[in-house]
Length: 67
Image (cartoon, rainbow, N blue to C red; front, side):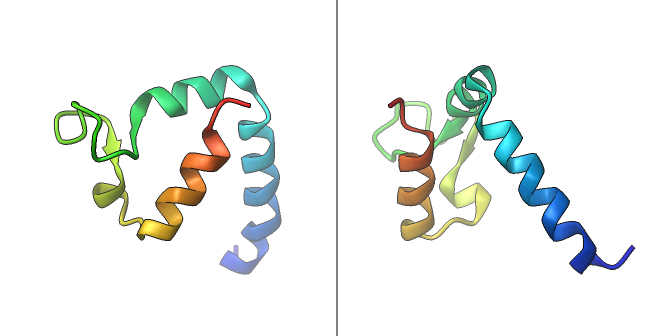
């Protein structure tokens, strides 16, 4: 399947995933997006490991923040 055909299903999957509160909580628990987090280098997925720029890190942090 050409990768271009995967864009819409991937976007739909992301929307579904991030509209599920329990999944957002679990994702938030694993991510280490703040350098001040004492476990930033110990476990989870930090911004460096994910290859996120500072702008992407801020956007993801906002997207996953409790409302």
